[in-house]
Image 1: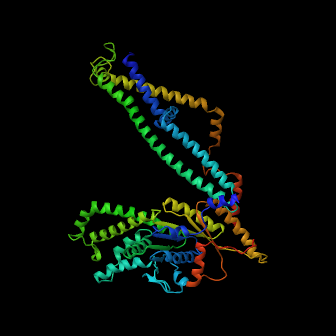
Image 2 (image 1 turned 180 degrees about the vertical axis):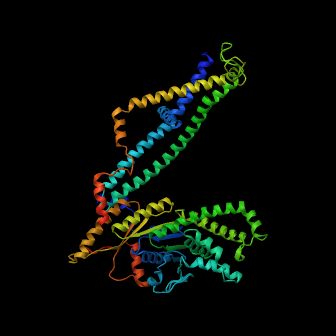
Image 3 (image 1 turned 60 degrees about the vertical axis):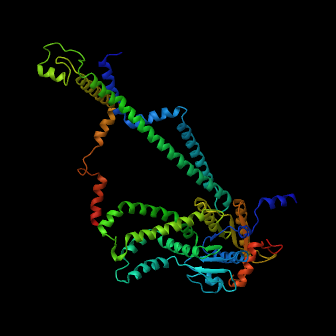
Length: 339
Length: 218
């Protein structure tokens, strides 16, 4: 009896209720290795959040867009209401698309297409990870103008995510350098380029610098918000298998390096064979999963560890997602008498 | 107050010794001596040693732990080793910068104490004769050269004395080095080396000679 009480005090509750209760949260990232159920988890979390918040936006930055699949509804680059909800919207952004758009804009203004891409494109592609940053900046600009209370990012698999989060810092540094250089050499460049500072293709240097500066400001502002644990949290999704756990550990350490708060882990695809089940695979797998669950409990004792069962059907469509999302809040009770 | 002659000689000897043993070695020795004093750097050097030891034990433990079977333990060890690694890196950086500073200061002091002091002596006593040479010992131009630049003719100037000291020290040190080298290498080793030395390409061993035609046949 007493041990049960101690346990209840000791371990954090195995739900995402804390995220729902923390009203100041503005950015929520959902990430993990590929195929562990990030999209399902983020959709479920969005559904639950939509019940307690004024408005929620779900953004997928994964190039393999699954939001459309999960909700059985086509989403695009613009935020669109999810069918059946009044305060839940979703959008899918393509990390590769928006740089083309950005460059395309500059060309359209001049009205010349032939040979117009040259310099700006070279410059833009020279910065590593610029495509992601561009899409990121575009989204942030949009999101800032819209007034969503909470924004959930369904991120691409692990490596991608971390680069995405790291990028603001990198770009900020690069842009600070460029700005400093341009103030030093600007006059000289202008002397070479002519009085109005025109680059080839009719772009002007000051204008370009202004654009980059604007981008930098947006990014640094958001960067500050990401590092504020009251505004941003990261939900790690994993399955109880070695590689997934390994990646999760690595991700949590790196997030700590970036000062991004994370205090929830969703362990997905748990098997709960019924009592007396004669499915060898299920029983063996359950044993293995139990081992890793024990390890998770030992390692992440200061995390909310949510255990989600593997269902017999695919979690697609509004109704199934809703019933699945319930389990994020009310812990799933495995069938009695199982392993 | 020892005589100026002795001071100049000792100074030249010291400069020569410093140049022979190398600035680096002397800096290292001084650094070690400095760290024996209760200074903050010696504490951080100690800390670094302790950290490195700890890091190694943690790494060994981590390597001995199966990441698949005891993931929690392994991950905790890894966190610890990462943290220790970072600490070591930071500690090293501060130590390195202190060391660089130390080297700079020691180098400056050394220069002032040796070359600076020498220049000062040579400037200060340039008009003063070190000693007089008996009249008629040397022709006038040699006397003039010995008293160069500003000592009275017929005497030896401090510059000439320095150069003479340097030359003697150089000769003696060369002789000592040669003697030591001769004593250190056993006679037989030298002979063997001479035997082993062959002009490349002149003579081939029988085995090689035998192989060459075979290869041609192939």
